[in-house]
Length: 171
Figure 1: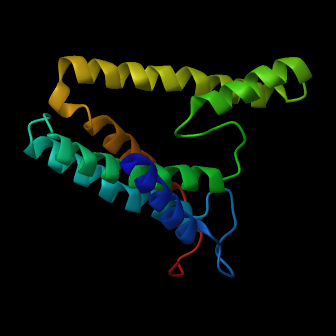
Figure 2: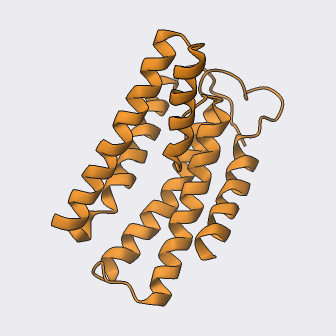
Figure 3: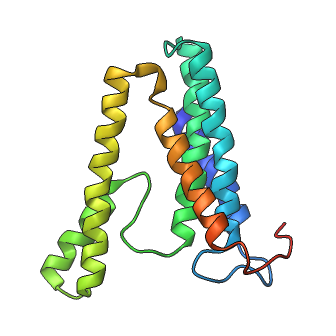
């Protein structure tokens, strides 16, 4: 219940941020997406700090707080990615990507470029899960660093790639 409630809060917050207001909400990667992902880092950082504070061995109460922190972060990230309108790519459920890829085999309607994009997503998901699993088994305490670093890299890349396009304040 904590995870679902926190995820819902993250979706609500993320939607409030990525929703375009007047000018500045368009483009391939609107700045609001980067801001939303950047703010989701607060949940990641809070999780990591608390995780390290309890030595990776949280009590039930602390586990609920950890679930809440990450739930909010994941809700915000899912909303940010969804706002990009890239079909078949979801940050929290790979099954939707499978639906798009397998549906494409039946319909054979998508371009070869789109098909390969979806396959790259499906390949990267288990690679990320494998990396996270290996960290969890062999370096348990550092497992939460992987999603934090991945999100930081996305935010940094987006910030650098789109830094010159629109210098107006967004909020």
